[in-house]
Image 1 (spheres, rainbow, N blue to C red):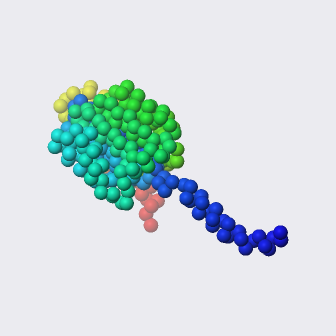
Image 2: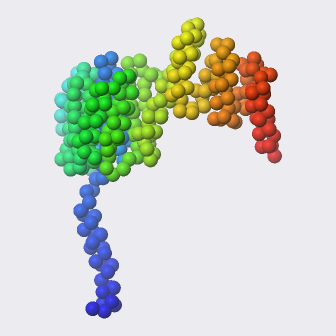
Image 3: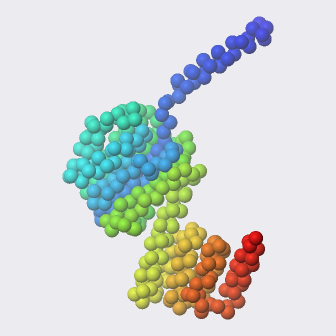
Length: 338
């Protein structure tokens, strides 16, 4: 057949082929894994990762002494506040889950077939659910036990949830650290099959306020790694605050240990090195202050030039290294002057 006779039919054939391919692809492209948990002290939280944008804005909910909830695959954001209210009123996770599903309301055009939910209460009871549409995203499933529920869809396999469960149960430390470790284990076991974009860690503690953890990576190539860095910096801040309190109480040994922890976990956060330098000066430890100040200046030269002028560093004036930083700062300022 002549080429001219074939060419006019190509667009129509292409469109029919494209249409058939689109029909063969599921309308929902989801891939999420999460763990909800409460510890014996009443701290409750959620760790979650997905291939969608800003998972921390709508999926995780938690309340100390009450429980934690994750609604995923096709999230119904009403599940969080409504579920916590039910748990707070004394309802069990199983009863709470049934109420949420019964009163789903077809949010955003979805149905309970598209929901995947994990719930745990502060007493350690747990419940989870995966609708038929959620289960169609290979691989999908759930695990639960005393104090936790783990759920995922679009995963490399059952080993993802198995690794998360094992790591959570075997790890030590705060609830936030255990949740973070569980999320990392899931990623190391294969994680999601269609990509990754955001992750979040939410822990409501019995102490509240600055002790709570509410960290989000809304979009990144390695969201779980970025979330880990944020958690380390959260604990760096906690450590430097603790060091300042201990120094005021005159317990210098513990204060120095807390400074070391803060710097180790700082991840290059300039503010932590600055506070460490100022604290060392107040403790009369000029050598350490000089070391910390040098790192701070190298991380943030602009802020460093301002910091070097503070009277707290008067005991360092005349020190050759300190004066060299001042000199470099003056040269930089002069070269920036029009």
